[in-house]
Length: 128
Image (cartoon, rainbow, N blue to C red):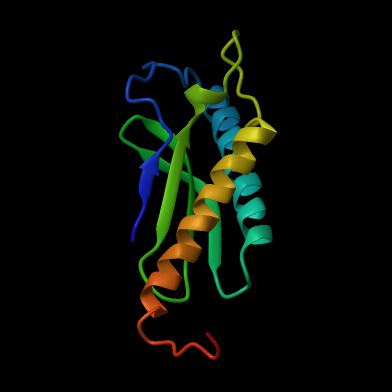
């Protein structure tokens, strides 16, 4: 099972970056959000899972990106844009705690399910 989903709105506001200072602030906010989600995912999963969080350039501008490489199987990813976490003045804000926890738990669950499905046929139960 592979889950690649984007929490980014397809209708983005062009020109949102404005100047280089605004773009740098957006990148800092996105990087902080990605690292916060990645930290939460690391807390939920064993050390065998490699978890990264960073900012990538997408077709709609910079996007926070969290990826999990399970011990077996393909990577699981999620991305979200700055538009979802801006206040009324257009300033970037941190991802809300409840949403961060939801995204992290969903990613961790999907990674664990992928590994379980990959090894389910190869394991012999020790008891019934």
